[in-house]
Amino acid sequence: MDEAMGEAMGEPAGRAVRRVVAINGSPRMEKGDTAMVLDPFLRGLEEAGADVELVYAERLDVRPCTCGRMHCWYGTPGTCCFRDGMQDLLGRIAQADTLVLATPVYIPLPGKMQDVVNRLCPLMEPRLEFREGRTRSRFRDGVALRRMVLVATGGWWEAGNFDTVTRIVEDLSATAGVAFTGAVIRPHAFVMRARGELSKTGRAIQGELQQAGRELAETGALRPETLAAIRRPLVSEERLRRMYNEELANANRG
Image (cartoon, rainbow, N blue to C red):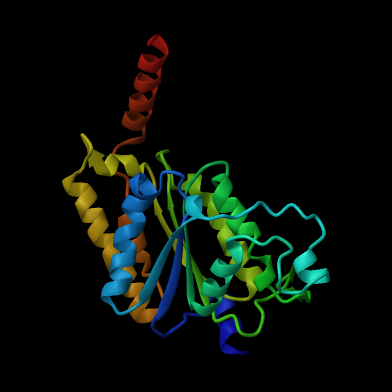
């Protein structure tokens, strides 16, 4: 078994992360809850020596994948028929060893983020394999990516709200033949703030996110204990539901 396939099957990467491309898919970019969670995670990676590039999907000139013909496989393999900002981004992703996809939970992804994910196809080898009961491909020779990581935020109380986006990134990793290193998730992320400022608990979670970034850079893995601390409940489900319903009632009365 080669090293890349071993990682894809869930074996630990066992080496440091060197170069990271992180894509923040939130339409609110720097002002959103996704940035509040992603930024300390990336700081931890940088503190441990990783070279990190942050990209905002909303600022990319990226068209939806609408050719309907898999032109990047059957027409000009490895090259998309659209000429836009995705070509440059694909080149930078191909040189990284780690891709971080950061997104708020919509149904299931924000539009621009979904466009970016769909447009990763030119990085794939136009050859199909059957692995672990599924039809798969893998990244082309020359693509350095070894792992993908999900960072996700949501407004609902439960961690189960992240299941769909986690499956998307996990399945994308398996199809490409690389490791899905894990999901850094933060339910009801907005509760990290109080009156517009980070609360004491919010600052503590950002510290844990920073620690997760350092762990990933140093070991190529994310410790389950750190991930559990990041996603821990900040309020009861009943209180959060009451907060939402009161806010909705007030908005409707206005």
